Image (tube, rainbow, N blue to C red; front, side, top):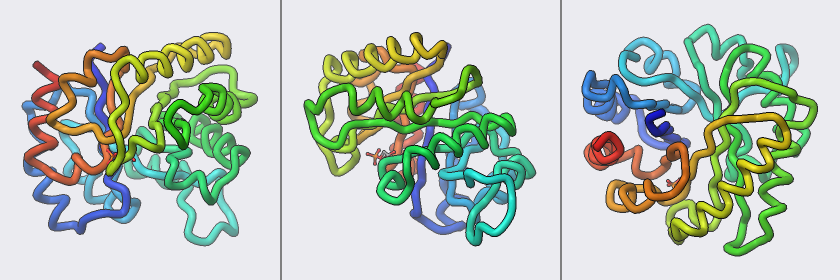
Length: 232
Ligand code: PGA
């Protein structure tokens, strides 16, 4: 399977900037690339309208079906716009959501056929791998099956951060895969944190199934170089 590339735009840029990015990225050249773009909620309808050669994701989902949850967006609403993937448990959100909410969000996505991209990672370099494995286990608590993706993102590597060695990434990803196997899941495990067009060749030597990209996805030309590098 070709590597999965996910762009997490976070809360950056404006509509005009996204038009420029999509002029370069929403191209036939990338039709065989497993590319998932995750814009802020308000730009989801625009991405949905122009989508041709990428898949649509978003950056969060409500844990609940509907009701008195001001400001939240449900799985059904996202489905209305063809959202197929959702980032859940990103380290920038873990500060204000609990493991239980993350688990409910994963369930909410799966129930509506949206693939949860569950983000896990230790805060500090060389921290015990159990911290990461516990994040995986609690996100999947009570879930027996379903299409999921795990994104291993050591928090200390998120830009501007330090790039882990391939060996470091391999060890963590192997532990995550063993853990997933015990839980009955056989799913892609991605790496994220300071990925860019200059280190993608080196990072591709690791045993990851793809990459979660933040900062580099905001720079259209560099992101295009990264996508071309992946396809080589
Ligand atoms: P980065 O962000 O690529 O800018 O390090 C990755 C992420 O936070 O998902």
